[in-house]
Image (cartoon, rainbow, N blue to C red; front, side, top):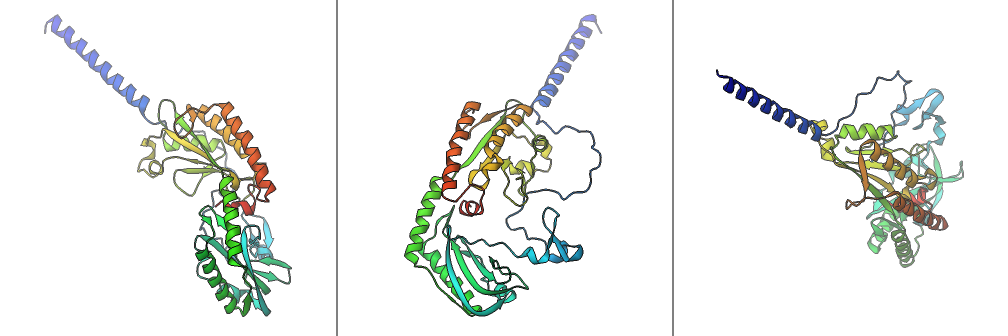
Length: 360
């Protein structure tokens, strides 16, 4: 082989090697970022895993939850007496139509439970029955082993599906009358026209004062894998949600709705090999009426958006991809204080039971 041929062969090999190396570098640069390996931590004392509660998830039975001395563990593992496990009252004249039901004598909790309708809704509105427990002198959802000398049936005036209408009110009357007949009671229903008008007014107020905020964090360069997003979110206090592709920031009190949610593509989370799925954005969301202002949810949302954008090399934008600057976030936070004050004045404070029911 001549020197010229050998030189051309070497040069060709070098060019090929350079092309292969450049291609590998490009592939690596454009591959989704994956979670980093972290040093193993010291074993911690066993704790109950915190996760987002599901809407239809059943509560543990007394037998499953019973602790020593005939007590039941609540969700924080504190021991509370069995007698205190009757469900808390929900009906509130502020947001419910309430029909009193008079009964002769006392009715066992078991009979009241057996007399409940198969579905606890009238149309799209929640339906509930409460009994008056003479021993505790309080309204509560009927519970086994208790006795009640009065009942009240109720249907919610409005929620995010709209105001209670004539058809839903009629369905409420049918369900409440059937329950009353089963327990030997006599119901007294408010005037339908008045209640439907009240429902429309409440729905108008709720529609004008509802707020669900969201910001998007978009990748500046390389995409992210689901594991990469989950790792960085977990460092900021997020825990896995019920739905794949969703993480939540728990409230300070167990059992309350999460302060914030972080969502990304569900299909990426369910992929056979999630680490090869490429995510270019995640969304932080705040359902304002669902979360108490004492949690400082918007401030935390802003701080977490900044922290995640910095750690994942992203940028904060709106739904349309427009960059959101800190001064704009501060202006939104100022406007929210006015909304909180309006809800407080209406006795529908953000995070209260009434607000969580109305804005659902």
